[in-house]
Length: 168
Image (cartoon, rainbow, N blue to C red; front, side, top):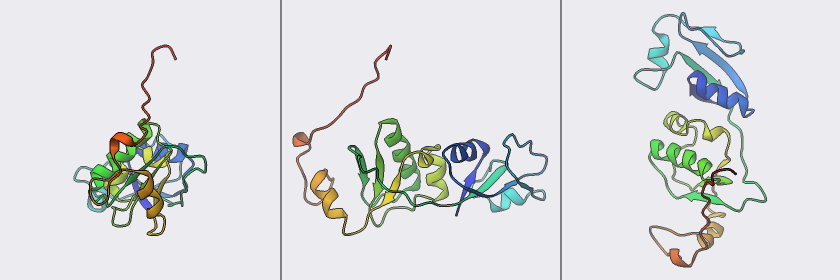
């Protein structure tokens, strides 16, 4: 399980079919989601949340295993991505770019880290994010480019770009 902070992220998780385990709200919070919740005593949210100025809603959501779609043609592989804010931003950007899934290599930040969840702005709930195994990394190494180690010439890789077209 992991924590989701705020009604907006909770709504996105529920809309994407993630399972709510429990929900807690600060005193006098008007809850606009139809979910069971417990009201906490004053100042408890501030003590248990991972942010300095927390949202008045904290939810515990069940983790679920993800898999890349079998017909995936556009996958982003992030190698040893350590910064949770960057990881969340990359997941959010990947969804916006139409990526079919994100693969995090061993040594990367946990996708359920509270900062990753917040920085993904809900994309974590809509795009598969999977952890690569050491065995699966050979496949990804043959298909992509890298900023270190052995490289595939980025100019020889077929890059796909989607640009929004007005009226479509």
